[in-house]
Length: 382
Length: 174
Image 1: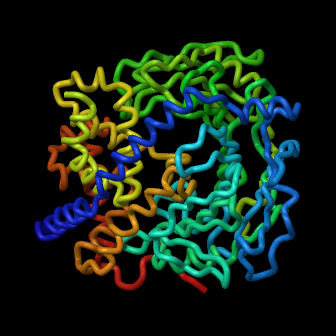
Image 2: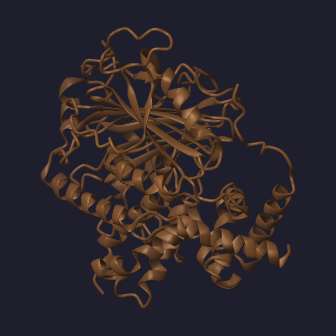
Image 3: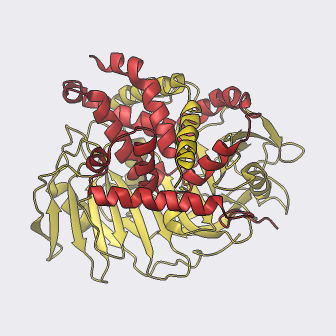
């Protein structure tokens, strides 16, 4: 490696540093986050309460059903052709219906992830309405491990608000006309490798198409966006459920197309009694035993201790500097009967985190796992 | 030093570092904001350290290395909280549309495709100019592993630079 080449690397990195974001945006973000935290402390977990009240099903599944028929081919759901009156939340067992999806993604892109999230609505922040749910679907042409990081990836993310939104906050972004009546707004990275196209197909529905690690990402995002339409036939059979009083906040499944064993699922739920709404517990359902301790973790972490879970033996890793970046949150590792593993952990570890081994065991024992969940969508194309 | 003082004084440098590390100004913004939110809640402890900026930098590095799930940039495209930010970015980025393409841009694209640990090691050596010993401490690995990361990164950058034609990872549209 020549010194010229190394100098080029140094120069390139300095150039990259010069393209850093404006600190004002981060300052504003910190301010908003602080405000939300204050509001949420005063708020209540409305969705959680509603889910318990309306259904005996173990997971708060809000299905996007009852919308108008999907627009015809080539049509984009637009405010003039409202595809969805605010859909009435209804339980649909262990399947979430995904209300919008693309009919085109680039050649070679295979679906590898679906996610459904019911978002407890905090008191609305000024200019942002409370939300009901969101879902996302992702496709990649590269290895799933690098999807959304370095591998070419397309994601369609849909957010449903409780009420029509009047302050879209998108007006200053460059406009892209998707059809005669639908205008989207483009946010493109400087080098064109990542683009987000956002629009409101209905007054209370926000859609974002992201194309990342793709040359000409704006064109790809636009073509995907033009193909998006309301479609309540797309289902997401949920791999994990909670059979207890505390509902799931989100469930996702991520899989390597073509490898039937290489899939994992993630579920998040709240921490009963936690003052900070961000406090949550996470469950991962994994093909192999997870490595809890990472190389960058602070030294001196105590070894795991055995605890009984569901008549078997699990391993509890006590929190070790959980508040530090890279520290170890309270974690429970549970062998599952199918040779796979469950990992239950404090998903928002803080210095004052109150998550105990009993909290983790309770979630593990309330969990319903579907090892044979329908994953026929993995590796598929629209 | 209060948290607000720290942010006012150090934020620009932290953002530059995160931008180099992530190769993505948007992701850098997300990472730094995430880290500062956590640092804020523990500032009584962090602010009392001899070098709080070093500690926060370490948090940024680890945050980048362990970035996953909804934080992964493409999987949850944007949150409603960031809609405003999208608008704020628009005018800023417009000014850069006509930025000159040169060798450095090509190099940046190659660096952006390096595996994360290789990229982190590269940045810590060539941007932060840290010795391997400190890089190893930061990445919690042995010095030999650091040298291996950097050697592979340099090798990858060199071989890709000499490869003509389109990069295999790029999209081929039909």
